Length: 604
Image (cartoon, rainbow, N blue to C red; front, side):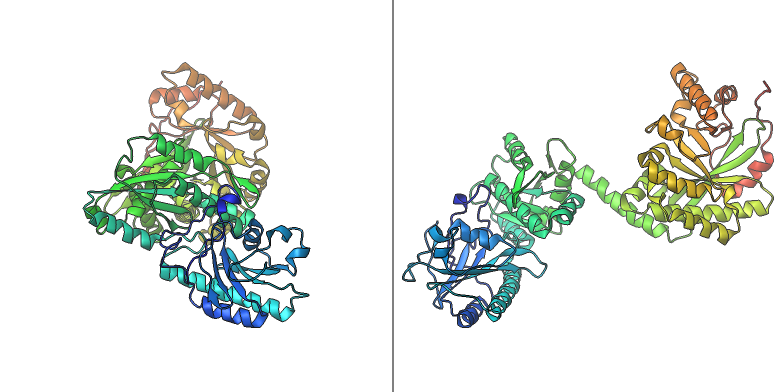
């Protein structure tokens, strides 16, 4: 079946441009929807109509009249009103175009039929995933008095068959059903062909429409039809930027790619800036404007790198990085890519380590009371001993756990192992408390139940436990946060505001928090001996916190001089290397037994 280019999208609205691949647009190969000729015969007989057409969003119409394929028509034959009907998600029935003000001046005259078209009906065509790609239209020279329910049902069924056929055609023809662009299998075939033509290398460009979470937000708010129209609009702007005769491919749900001519790719970087500028301009999709956050990546690849490699993964790395940059485009960076690969490897290894009892471990750093010099508690700190990479810093794997959604599992592991160890120490007569770090993802209504379950399992009272939340976590959502914290406090569990001074430092929220202690961040404490401003901050914060009813804990006490300094402040506890480094659980009892003779606060 040949293509009927019966409508010039440029006459309808800016930005609506036919995005059919070059192999389909106006080619001798034609456009063949599997079974479309059978659907045409079915609809023609059932509805008694001579003209059946499949009209896609881009404006291309694939038509039969009186059972015969229509030859190509000059652009402009299909009036914009018919295209609007084809883009609508609802069916249209116009019994007499001469009696409808919208269609009176838009009545079609076809060379294959005598006289204008008087009857028009359309039914939207959807893919199997619910994405609308156009409409099945039927037309007649004679007006109708009505369209029966059985005829409407027949048209709906025919549209469903066409939708399934378009999807099948897309798989067979290597095209995306929404944009009608060739997909990634065609991209790889054409890239290999390009490199076989004695080209030393190829430049690949990728365009990420938006971060995945933001694109999903578009769909939740506006629906798939809006997202489909956005993808077509982005494809149009990108295609307009590409050099002539350069094919655009849809290689992912929100990603396009192209193989650029080798010449002058980066000789004028303003061309790349211009593409980003075009993509950052608002898109008018279905009458609703939207601004996206595009990322454009560039990759140079040769044939040897293509063998066994994945250029789309590499250029996607660049386009993803570009989304985070002001400029909006970036070259592939091998070092950055390797860093991301290592992070992914570590995430998978960490997930496995959480089910393994040998790699993860807890070390415990003592906290001493400044009035008595006695150890009153220990803070549990996670350690990861990877079997091949060795000791991995908590600063690295905890951040990975947060980004990968593993933080709740890690917190649960620390909670269960820490409480089990606390129970063992208490059975041996060590009257100390346990402090655990908890992330913002754990601070929800389920946390109370998790605490109760673990405490009951290990027969430990929850008043022997303190949970440490960062200052930023506690200040972000005060109303909800206070509700959860209050429930935790009702269990008898202590609550510490950790790293105070590095986050919001919101004093209004601070006075309303049901916390029991405040930990002054070590970044202020370590420089007290050389920086009078830090010493003033620590002294003032300690005094304020004490007056607000908090127990004040000073972190980062690493020297005898710092310890002497905090003894003269309104501080209750100290923690740091001067007292003890974090210890494996097996060494804690011996340290407790040997811990004596730390100076204590002098009576005032």
